[in-house]
Length: 185
Image (cartoon, rainbow, N blue to C red; front, side, top):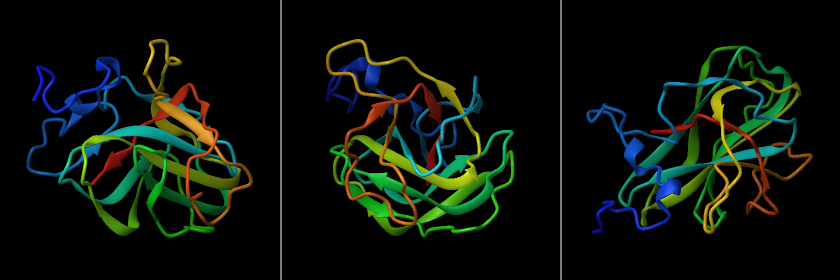
């Protein structure tokens, strides 16, 4: 144990202080608090956006939740959520939602195909892909590029022309300023 608790990395990357947001009776992890959020254009059709999500050893993640902002998904053909390990390797993906509607200002909770018991505390990645005529905006914030040695992107894009299946790895990630809120339960 360190003065930072279980976190041993760069302090600026630490998301562990957001553990339960005052809800100790309900397991959840979030990548940011629910305050100061706005409607952000975090998605491009067919391109995965992934965000850091601190998970603790022993956590059992069964669902991921993203919240649409003021713009609904327009004519979706595929969308899914996925959980990646700290190295960027796919752990589990939700079912492809195909053409299911996703209205504006709506929390969308999708079950992972296989629940994931976290075996090592760290910065995991929660991914979202929406292939649609118009991807929804998401509730989130904006973040700065990494500036200190060892810092990672808070949000990043990867892949192109994605449809119903999450990539096996997060390959060639690119910094994304818009950081969507994600909640793991």
